[in-house]
Image 1 (cartoon, rainbow, N blue to C red):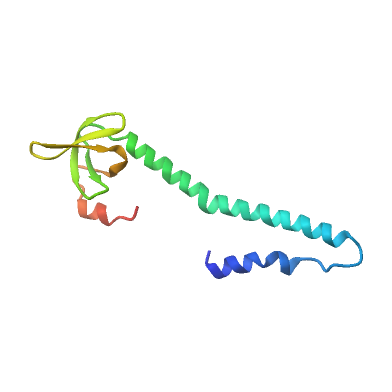
Image 2: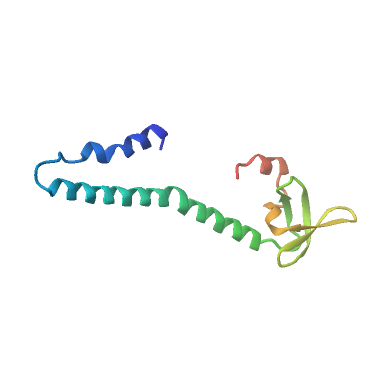
Length: 126
């Protein structure tokens, strides 16, 4: 949705509001309409923002839990290495001959396959 369509959506209850008459029915109908509109906005907010974020977080957790010894991984900083040891919150990764570093699991950006091109993996949007 674009910003202009959201702003027109925000003006919808005022355009659809009944005319205020001498009776008290207009005020009660208008307040119910506003609550319905508020509920619709909350549902829209949930399905457009909260639910996709939870899905991405779940996929990220599954990726981090799937890391095992021997996997080639791409760090968030751009390094590529092979997992030598898996610990609770960290990984020991071999990045060169006789060079091992300990990194946080959160630094893993992607698990690479054996024939994966690291440059193609880095160009892929997160």
